[in-house]
Image: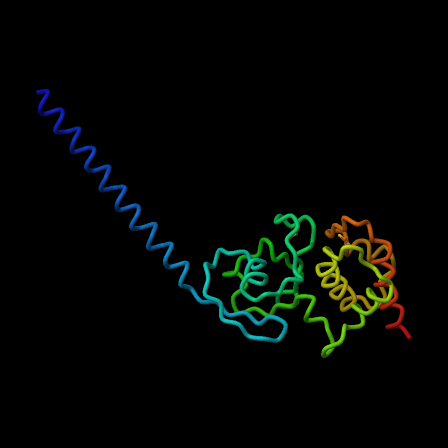
Length: 190
Ligand code: FES
Ligand code: FES
């Protein structure tokens, strides 16, 4: 009776081992499927094919694979706006947008706002007013401001404040940033 019971335990242990091996093989092959997937992105007018895990946040692809370092990591949770980009014309957060969800999209980062090799009008206004301090927040803010001006050529101060609501500037440069945006809005009216 005791012998029979110990054989049953051995069999149980063996089936546990078999189950673990099967799970390991299954997880491993799923992992490999993720890693070898290819994605295509158009970033600031250039096409890229990316081999990466589709669950990678787009921010890591932009910074790590494409060397676009303007787009910043701040909070990783859609709270600071440092990573904001345009995806097919929509304002999104690169820190939470997954690569697989950005496949075959057109992406604009702050580099895409330049005119030839020169700063665009909005970027020049930020430079002229010396709007930033450390500059960490500016790439995201410029993208949001560009989108705002595309939709509303003459936003008033309140409308600009509302648009920038999701952006944190740790240096407290908001007043100068709003002034820079207003200066472009006003010059558009000329
Ligand atoms: S890093 Fe994306 S919102 Fe803060
Ligand atoms: S200028 Fe430093 S965080 Fe905005």
